[in-house]
Length: 131
Image (cartoon, rainbow, N blue to C red; front, side):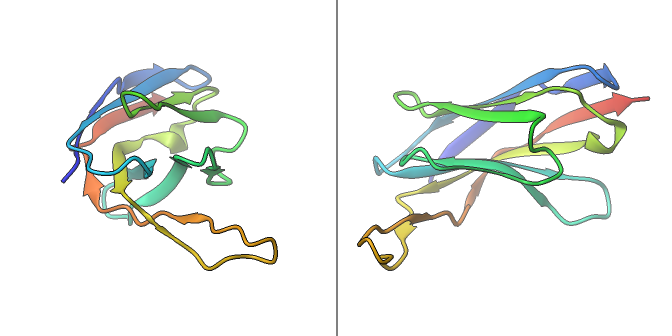
């Protein structure tokens, strides 16, 4: 089981920036997915950004162009750089991982892409953006 610890949350005014970090340990495989999710009270957890060991990166439309996910492959530390923050970005932010993810069926070129199914979670860090 992967252990994840998020840091870097806080309060900021609209238009400001924050950087979240996720330290990890307990990996069993070299292939991985690491991602960021967020959740507001009373709402479902929402995918924000994800990166896998192939280097594939995905973003939710709501943060594309404002947030950047990165990883230190050696330490498997994930970061989320958040710029131009908006009040609607206020939420608890969670780091998540998939250790040794499955790969999908081959495409027409014979390539098999990683399918991320996040199953380990950090405790979360609060981000509050005031207008």
